[in-house]
Image (tube, rainbow, N blue to C red):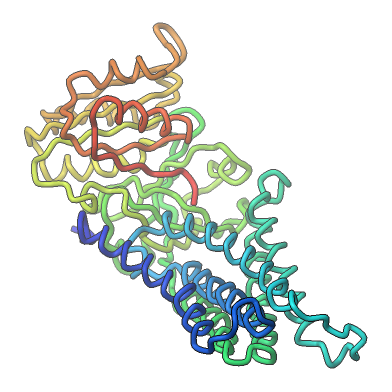
Length: 434
């Protein structure tokens, strides 16, 4: 069985805390130590200059952390999950931009620099100015890309190339004006090299498309088999980064949940047709090739500290069933006939919109403790799922259940609020996008 053991419960919390402390010590502790190593009279010219240099160093070290996160190191994913790391990536990017903006103001606050110096003599300052503009441009485009209508496939290569160029500018600037803060001149390019090595040495799993079949309305199940070897070990509920080598689809890497169970010899992905890329998933054909990187993520009862036999509660909307279906398929194979109490609440627009509905309805025959509650928002008897309706569906579910929620953002916000109000303390959720 290709079942991937991962740290769970307290081990995950300890790993996440250790990672956060390491980032804090690097990005804040090192510049602070450098600032305090050479005391100066408060608010003096030297004090302001040292403060400004420390801010610049902190920004450069934040940039180094960004490269480490973007390298998608499996060790970090095992500690805290790639989806969480990329949310941290966005936050650190904003902080780096703010620190970099404050850096020149603090450095030049007490002094009047002679800007009439020859331009060649000031080239390190121009490199720093270019780095600052590049950093803010990268952060702004990343933040507002959806509003600008910039396709992800076009943005990502530009973002990566810009970040590598930014690391070079930071290196040049800090190496020639950094003084005792020159460590920041090495951190960003060193992390950039790590990023390139991680990308270059990480070999994706080459697969062949074995089947493409409809899975409910506007969704397809894609089955991939490895061209060599076996399916890598993974935990049910994890996701992979998949790119299809097919002339009918752009060669883009997208995160898709692994819907199959770990004991299966193939990887199954159920993909909703809801965007420019996924709308063409149905054009895939057997024999097409794909590259798979992963697995990633920690959305699994095997990683959440679930005790053997304890009750589970699954809440899904639409294609959000996929990670939960992976867990249910694993349970059906490993705990057939088990009385474990499992409650599945699944909301769809109608029966035709529910992927793998027949399979899900047949799971109670394998898992006698499974209680299935379906909700449709359209059609005969359909109604909008609101807080009272969801609370009614939760009636009878043990409050000590370990709960998992997956679906659109609005559904997850509703589910988390209702679960909290109903006394469910242990809730895990899975976002649709990184």
